[in-house]
Structures are given as structure tokens and as C-alpha cells.
Image 1 (cartoon, rainbow, N blue to C red):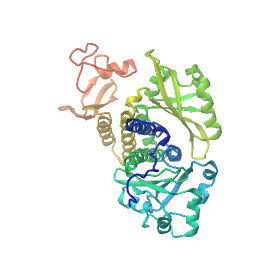
Image 2 (image 1 turned 90 degrees about the vertical axis):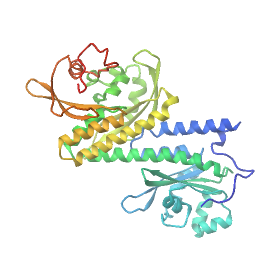
Image 3 (image 1 turned 135 degrees about the vertical axis):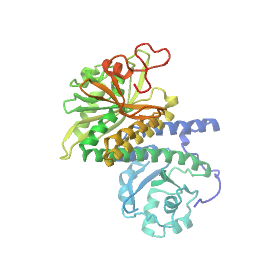
Image 4 (image 1 turned 180 degrees about the vertical axis):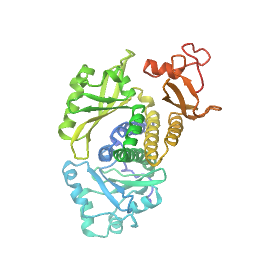
Length: 447
């Protein structure tokens, strides 16, 4: 449902304010915007914050106003979840203006076609005749005229074969017009939005599953501890209750040296910057996302740049138990896009593993699945899960992936002569760079 031809003399490219200069400048600005989108949508794990961030990214740089609609998985209905206008006065009224006019996903409109065909729909120029055809209802026409609509681009949110919803990008008051060359760029923006929304749903589903199963809670707790992003939880007195290894490494202290201590005690150089945000989340219950933090790397190798998000952890009785912390290291911005995409896949694998664990009755099956998932998510050829067992005690092989000839149930003496024993004794990860030259312990494929 593409209307009109190419770009007219009055057309203005997306991100017009950033694209003065050559085509190379325009391409660079668009790539920078997509990288910003990836960074901005990486931290919020709740759907509401993600939707709000999508609208803020879209307006005014991609559109004069926008509306995001999500598909209800239970009945297929389309529900508007967020709307934003570049004009502050209209922005305050846009939700009320749109409220009386729900969109039928089966309708013969740009939105309907975008949902069914899973392809962008472009109306380059929305003239009077087109307006009457697209929106025959005069009251609804008047509402759209108040908001301004001269050019429309509808982008579906599609991921893993599912359409999550659409974003309706509209130009009017600014005088800009969309063209065919804008479609691929806006589609790239839509793919990143779809990934962020999918991750938010996976995270929410994982939380709901955890609340229904103590066993799943223990498993997910272990997975979170090993997650490749910084995760932590502080109580209402701003004392650390839990941190994973990644967050501990960012802070430059072992996990054990965090527990029971306040944030100000662990991070005195960042207390003035971090503590007010944490207290605000406790006081208001509202999340704070994408807080940029810069400081000296604990290893002394230079400045480290981080993105931190904080959210209230609320129990079944709506009582706030503390604040959840999510921290990402974005120091290598030139590689941020690829790293964040890989991280999203790992988070999806973790959430999926947690869900499968709840549906699996046998512990052996859960552990085997965890070994496979760890290898796939971290791009490893081999993985092994060892159990501390027996009166000895000994290390027993419980699950393997990729090893040839390794038998489940094989036991190894616990001590510093194996990699696993050495790791347990030293209380931290152990890296073997070269199996042939390793001298700290005897290297065995499973240990």
C-alpha cells in the first residue's frame, strides 16, 4: 500500500536536522541513530519503559507524531499503548484525541496491511481525496487534521515469525514527507524496537514463572549469577543483597565484599551520582533507565562508560522490597551494536531455559539443557556441569555438551590438581589459555 512516487522537491529526509551535507553525512547520521536506538532500548526490561523510549526516539526525528499499537496475543486485537507529538500542547492531548478511534487489524488500511503482510506501508502524500478514502468518518478526519497528517509510514514489529504490533509514523506540521528511500531505514529502526519489546516480554514472562516455582527461582538465580550483564539487588536501606559476577567485576570487588554493605560504602566515588537515583526508585516506584555513568576502570586501564537502569522490586502484596540494578558496559561503542545483539540472544536463551526448566520434571534433563544452552549462547564448542557430591567429597559429571567419550557420573577427586577443584578452592573463574602449557593443575576435558 505504497502511495505516490519518489521524493518531491519539498521532501525532507528523516533526521533532517542531522543530515545537512553530503550523502555520506546522511548515512553516518542514520547509522549513529540506529546505534543510539540499540543502546537506548537495551536496558529497559519492562514493556512500559521500552514503549516510552521507542516513542521518544521516533518523535521528532523520525516523525511529527507517532502511535505504537501492540497485538493482544489472546484475541488478536490491536491496542494503542503509547502516542507522542512534537507539539507540547498536542502531546498532552494526543492520547485523548486518539482514544475514541480504535484500529481494526482486519481493516483495508495501511495499518491493517502492515499487520497482515508484515511489510512497511507508505503513503507519501495524504491529500484530501486520500484522507476521505482512508478515513471516511468526518469526526475522525477532523481529529487527524488537528494532529496534522500529510505523509504516513507504518512499520510492523516482526520478530521470530510473530507480529508484535506496529508504529504509525506521521508527518504533517513540519512539512517533511516520507519517500521510498526512508522505508529501509525506518524498517531497521522497527526491527530494533521489535527485539526490545520481545526481550521485555521474555523478561516479564520469566519473572512470572519464577514467582510460581521455588525450584525455578533457584535455577534462575544461578543463571542470573552467570549472566553476561551486571545484575544486582539492594534492599530498602540501600545495602547489597545480591550481585552477579559481572557486576562485581565492574565494581572492582568480589561479590562477597558487596553483601551487607551500602552502595556508598562500595562505590564512594560514585555515591553522589548513584544513591539519589536509587532512593528515587524506592520513593516513587518508577524505574530510571539508561543512566550514563563514567569512571576509572578498576583495573586502571582507563575510563569505563556504563549504562545503568534501576527498577523497583515489588512483592505480591505490592510492598517494595528493594531495587533491581542492571548495568551494561558500553565502553567499546564502535562494537556496541554487535555486542548488544549477542547479549540479547543470550538473555533470550536464559529466559527460554528458565521457562523450559519449569516445564521439565527431571533435574538431569534441566542440567543437560543448561549445558547445551550455555554452549550455544556463549558460542562455545564444549561445556560441562559438575556436581559436588559424596562424603569425600568428589566432583561428579552431571551434564556435558560437545565432549566425546565423557561419561555421565564419572567422578574426580576434589582438590587443586584439577581445574574444577582449583576453581572451587580459589573461589573465582579460572581461565586456561593453552592446555599444552598449563602447569597449575592437571587438565582433563571434563574438569
